[in-house]
Image 1: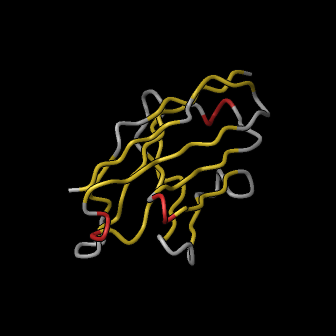
Image 2: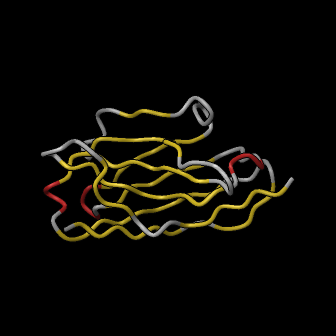
Length: 119
């Protein structure tokens, strides 16, 4: 099992920045990549960004490209999501997820952290 704990959410104004953190514990060797997803009220959960633990490959949703940056600090088993120039449409609960080697799916999820962007 892998446990994920997110932090860093909050209430900000449009144009502000936030950095989310997610720390993994447990059988982290079973995972090879991490991702961030978000779910706004009344909408389905959507992909935001993903990164391999080595940091060699990153992927972003079009809506956040050039504003968000995902990174890892493997020695701390932590993944970050730096969010700049936040917009009200970025308001959502943000979830961290771990991708496992065997099935290549995001099998483990954190509890989520709320990000609210006011206009």
